[in-house]
Length: 437
Image (cartoon, rainbow, N blue to C red; front, side, top):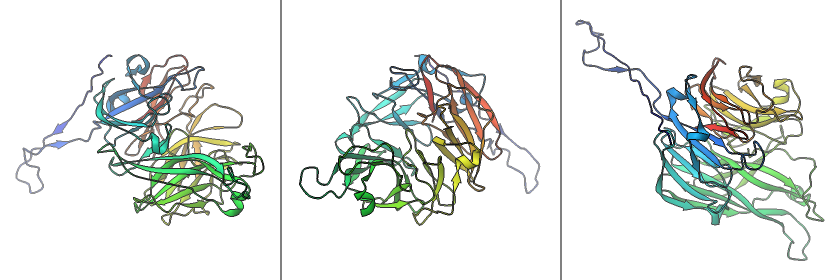
């Protein structure tokens, strides 16, 4: 593998004055702030069809300065390092960019948590400590790193969904699976706690065949005493047990559990939207400065929404950000999104019958959204597997490459709405870039 050199430039200013009371001493050094972290770029390899991302994941690290430099070219698929995962890996990176965390998704090592030291280019040095969570959360767990100083990861799963009378002659009452909520100690690489339980809905909902099919996108509230976990709902025919493809959806639901005990699961329900809030390959729940958690939905009957969960850990049903209404198009589907700062975030979305992806700037304060026109329109741009955003102050870095085509890292300046073009991303046929971490 080629070595990619990190270039750090630190400029110092020495100000010399006479004996004025406000002077700076001659030997005092003033250092301008510069970004000095590693930036990991990730890409998904095609499996059988272009853009399916089922061939595995590649990663490559550059300096922040190179990531935002349009004169720099990154060829991830020629120079990068493969990540252990049967399919697209679920990657997380430390806040300083120097450590990569991964739980292998499916395959022989599915559910294995590992940690890597990021040293630039393709140099990801795996530490000699691993732990498997497969026996608790399955070989394909969903997980996220909490924003608690890189101390904790939360993995979640729902398994063995079945009717209460599957093996008896009792009257039907519900379909439920066994939910697992597991805490990973990221510093010591061990399972610090886990809980398993059934999570009931209301009696009326369960008798009709509704059930929680998947958990994902855990986030810690501002008080650090509750986890909010997104759900993906399904409905089964109570008489046959067959999964129903069309039904009247329930309001969007999240599960709230005590933290750090992981006990006492309860379900909260939105009356604003009826989509799922589990995301797909990345988190869709974010804590903002006002203490609220903002949540994106998918598979809504009237297009995706962003919802608000208050500091009381309940939905604020007066907050109604419909992306159909905000963008003036029909059937918006938020593929993923990232909150940045001061009420501003960015969504990746498609709409209507098209699979083409777009990017929009969202203002939670005014409950409005606007397409980012600087991102080139391309019918081959598919961001449904996108995972990684890098927030740097008020800026957001995002990798944009249509399937099989070259692209760029873009720097989205959240507070001004301006966009600048960063490093070039060299692609291979059938592949696409899925993140900047």
